[in-house]
Image 1: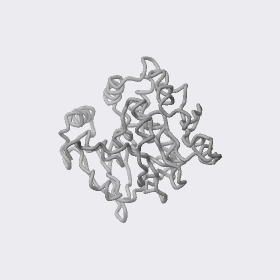
Image 2 (image 1 turned 180 degrees about the vertical axis):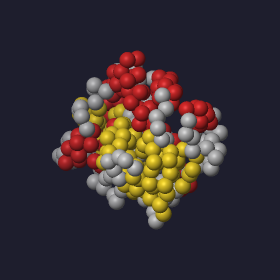
Image 3 (image 1 turned 135 degrees about the vertical axis):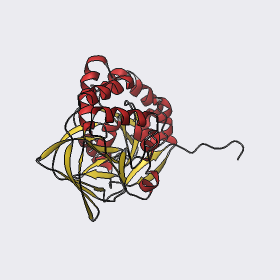
Image 4 (image 1 turned 90 degrees about the horizontal axis):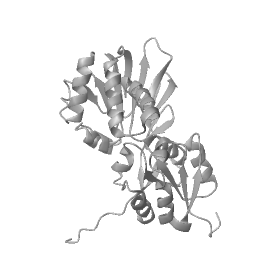
Length: 304
């Protein structure tokens, strides 16, 4: 890339619900970036746009959006040498919050300009990068209900919680799963499998596993509950951070996972807040290539 060209590429989907809910956020960030950044609006798969930005020589590619958009950009950047920056403009922004990235767009842009590169290991689901979590069972159904609610009323966190409640009240039949964890096989009937890769998200819900994630392991949760009432109780315990590990959920910390669902060839999967239809079995492992992310500068203790 010529020296007079910007080193930062900012990818933003102007048609997304996030952009419509927070108009002007990207423009405010771009004012902070100044001539060091180029804005590229896009529609479709953010991974394609991120790969194009890498080919064009950008050293930093910024995902302006929610966790799903950030994961798409991360998929293209892992192993390339280009670093991922995040403008957190989604509903929950778990990945950005885990990085301690400010949620104000101008502050986030300054943090990207002043931040440091850091290598992290990311998970893959059938070869596709994810940053926070994947789930099968009732959670993808929650996402479908949530998107329908957003389309009618807008993207607000309280609506996401109400959509979750509506889905639980329409509870579906649990799946019969064969789960392979490293060298062991586990057969279970469960309404939800949840695989975490974000220590921040676990902490938000009072769940164990942060140390395992630091040790480059996944945290696998399987729900015991088989009824609507059981799921309502579990949802309340998650909100109030009072989940009983072992009684409410089964927890393990494998490095590799494979999942088959009896009677199914394909299944709906939630990947970082995006609902996908995927071929079984599901294979979950760490990516072979590290991802470089931009961390905000460390705060200096004035008394230190």
